[in-house]
Image 1 (cartoon, rainbow, N blue to C red):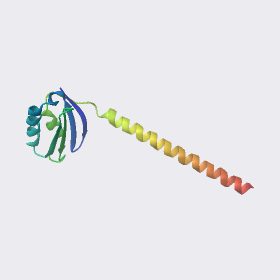
Image 2: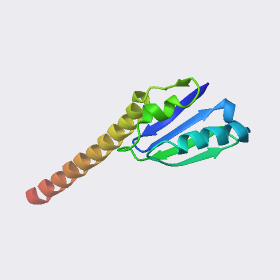
Image 3: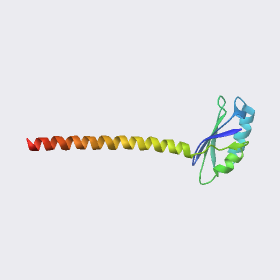
Image 4: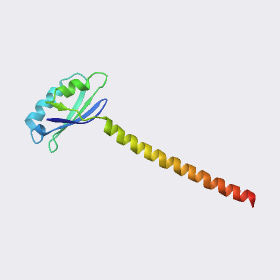
Length: 116
């Protein structure tokens, strides 16, 4: 079983148990992927069974690349994007809260100075 871990255009990282400590199988998949038009490089990590596929998004189709891997199970991309979105929202909220608080404090200080 191959688990899809991460994909952005031009970069796919997958992990599969069949590649863990299996250089013969990894070399076979690596060669098959590298023969595909648009694939720039394929890196194998023996301890994790991970492959990093770098490709030209204009010249290669990510679905076709994943189809070369045995029984690829795609994990939904939305939760990752949603987590990043939540983090961005939290940072934006903190920055806005700080800016508003600072502006109010400065306004109150300026008002107090003007009245005294």
